Length: 243
Ligand code: F6R
Image (cartoon, rainbow, N blue to C red; front, side, top):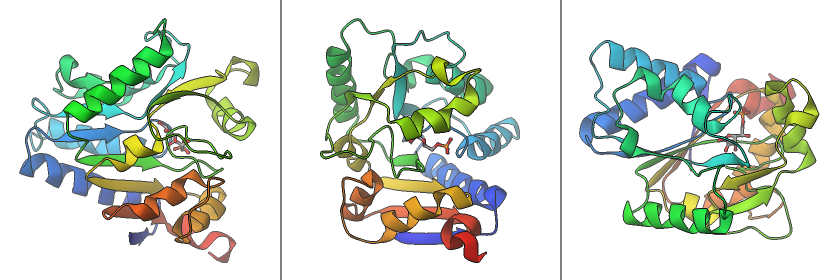
């Protein structure tokens, strides 16, 4: 694993957006694996600025999102479909048919999960997968548990994740209790992975991820199995209270 320790959130966002923009310039039809949440928003803002300056063209780029709450309507302003449109897609020239997000509206979630894995397989895996890290060590919504699931699946969210995500909702009771998420195998099928981690509250999970031992209690530890992972973190996440 390559580890880049940055001064702060802005530098993390800058370093990640430089890698992604280089990827887009080198391969026009690049396949990007995208995440939601607070961490990648600075990256998305940088990519939008580069697009507006005419430096990037997304017309052949495809996007595959990690996860979506279940059940949720696409036009619900808490859905990840809405988040991606609001924070990135509506500001760039990506084609709607090149956007892939598991559907929170699917009547049969198991079929939706199979369909999503087939789409990822047809794509040959994404070229660059962006990941955030849960305070509990999750990636996507692969939560700490006795077992980790390889493929895209429907999963209950843990109390820790529901609490962490309640900051986006009016009340904790409004936070969905389930999500469809790419599994750890689907994530590891990416050609390269960028794990972005900022803030002291991620320090413990980051250290458990970087340990080099695999544990289902820190799902992100499976990243040790991948040959092309770059961790871009800030000092607070890397050094914790020692900063
Ligand atoms: C989001 C996702 C999650 C987040 C993680 C960190 O699509 O899959 O794993 O990346 O919960 O969230 P933030 O960035 O809000 O701290």
